[in-house]
Amino acid sequence: MSDPKRLHPIAVLLNIIKSIKELVIPFLLVVVIPGKNEGIPGWIQPLVIAIIILLIIVNAFLQWLRFTYRIEEGEFRIESGVFVRKKRYIKFDRIHSIDISEGIIQRVFSLVKLNIETAGGSQADAVLSAISKSDADRLNAFISEEKNANNPSDGDEVADNEFAAKSSSVFKQTLPQLFAMAATSGAVGVFLSGAIAFISQFDEMIPFQRIFKDYEDFIEMGTFILTLFALVALLAVYVLATLSMVIKYASFTVIKTDEEIVISRGLLEKRRLTIPIHKIQGIRIMENLIRKPLGLATVYIEYAGGSMEDKESLSIMLFPLIRKKHLPEKILEILPVYETDTKMTPIPKRALSRYVFRKFLYLIPIIGAMVWFFRPWGYLFFLLVPLAIFWAYMQYRDSGWSIDGNLLLLSSRFFSKQTLIMQRSRIQSITYKKSWFQNRKEIATISASIKSGVTSRVGMVADMEEKDCLIIKSWYLPEKAVDSQ
Image (cartoon, rainbow, N blue to C red; front, side):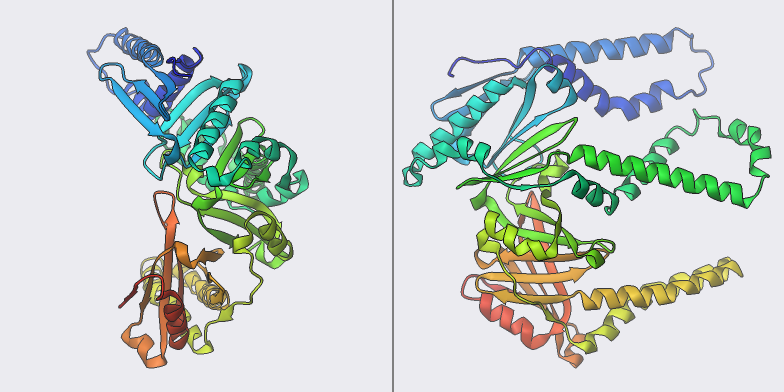
């Protein structure tokens, strides 16, 4: 495969769509949204739009024409650039993961998008936006064979990864489970906030005043009708958010081989992500306010890879929804080194007052300001007091730690409960600190960080027994240095 190859011509269309997505907001703000244009001929705006579109098309074609890739001398080589020629050489032994996805346009033409990553960064090291499935499979197999040749101790097992991947499904999320996962997630909030933000960008184009004037009679029908209308709208948003997540994670499957974990999912956009097991830094178990009482959780992989331009690659879902009682069994199948069934050590009861105090530290100024400026309605904000106490208790109750062999478990809660499981050899640093107030109660705060994507993932437990912090410190000291403040 030493001859340079171009992407499929449909890459021109993909480049055009990408350029439009990047320019859509400034384009709308400057060109489309009407404003004061006295003295400017009416033909100027269509001409500007036509020129911009023409430049986008020409640039997309030149990008496709000047982009080539090839494999040569143990390297994946890419040449690109319209005016400035760029050459990128990626050694096979530096490749961490290969991500294969199929968007709607790619699927129409039986193509895929292939991302090659060497380490966490602002973007993927190589992106082939439109190649055939057969070429993608050949590239994947060739790179795996070359990496295996450089590591002969792995034997012939790595060469059989593709066969193993096709025949040994470890975890598959069923459709009812996907609906339960989507229905109990926070996607509705993201969906609603995104819709509000989108509409707010076009308030000059949408005639809100005329709309509200036409519906004055409807509004006068009373609070009941308005409340019913709002509930129907929220229900519609909830259903749309749920369906969007089901479509995104449909056919979610995890496959384990000797060296890799292959995660595939998606209905409209199919995606397959290959993660080397040796790059996994830890696992994170998340339980939100709805799932925890039901004994359900979501599990993520923390690994040294991903790119900033692909947010999903920075937080990889291993199990979208799983019962906590089944978690040790599934972890044993996929990542046995992280298998643990140890019970967490809770923080002391005397720490509860500090959790409550921290909530009131922020709440009292807010209540005071609301009462002062919005009397008498501001007194309703006193209803936040029992809510703050309940939130503080939940955070106190769900905080804890545990050591199981070479594993450190740190559990805490902000809104959702997070349990971070880390190997001692993967921990980058541990920080142990105590304030003057903590010192009086003989408690302290400890945190541990591991590599995750382009940054770090931090697990922290506040106000735990000081002697427990020293136990974690002595457990970790043989491997690394500990920061103490």
